Amino acid sequence: MTDKLQKAAVIGWPISHSLSPTIHTHWMKLFGIDGTYEKVAVGPEAIANLLDQFKTEGYVGFNVTVPHKLDIMQHLDKIAPLARQMGAVNTVKIAPDGTMTGFNTDGIGLVTNLKKTVPGWPKDKPVLILGAGGAARAAALGLLTEEVPLVMITNRTRAKAQAIADEIGRGRMTVVDWDDRADAVAAAGLIVNTTVLGMKGQPALEMDLSKAAPDTVVYDIVYQPLMTPLLKDAEARGLRIVTGLGMLVYQAAAAFKIWFGIDVEYDDALRTELEGQF
Ligand code: ATR
Image (cartoon, rainbow, N blue to C red; front, side, top):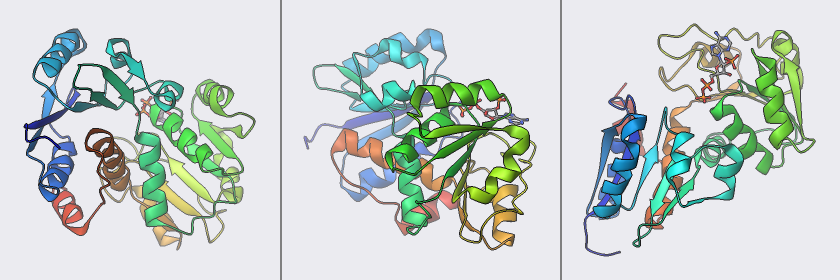
């Protein structure tokens, strides 16, 4: 590590509510890295100039969030294979010579959070993914890497689920009709909500869990609120749950590793700091 100020950032629009600065500055302090991590609100028209500025100022890298995860790719020199498969980038590393490489750490973040929270999750059973946006694609790729036997995907707009299954499923993904999702629950060892439903300001996800086996794990990637209606229902039924905040933390951990080469953890101090912001 040099003694130069290590600069990183998250770019998006809007960005004011991002928790990423809290997470990264926690680890920078913990590991004695003299660095900054700022939020930069930027629209699509200003991205090229911003990236030039990051290069000139010697940034180590940056995170990318809504709405730039797809469009950022055209500005980068290299895209890591997993990010290419996901069709989206959430982390960029800037080499000392200015070369920019795009990565996607959302899938690994989701899986790490699952493994840390529920080490004994029923890996031998199919997974049911709800939704077919970028988060669903990341979840599917992450879970397929874990060699689950089957990923079932269901989405209000069926064609989007079918497109994901066709592109990345390699014979291990099937599409379930949105109206049949309650039946698919019976076979699933893990249910992952990647839709926006249940988020503050959105309607709750209507998901009948009555057919779930007792060892089923219910995972919601929505973390605002921390306990979504889906998770409350699952918990009331005695099912094991995984809240979404850990995914945010572990995708950040993977980004931190890419920039600084250091393995970091979701420690209690960070948990307290983050949960205090809700
Ligand atoms: P991201 O890229 O973050 O995953 P997204 O692409 O906007 O976000 O995806 C949002 C997901 O929530 C989609 O699966 C969307 O379903 P459609 O593909 O049918 O639009 C789902 N979603 C949003 N509102 C919904 C609703 N009222 N009922 C069911 N699904 C909904």
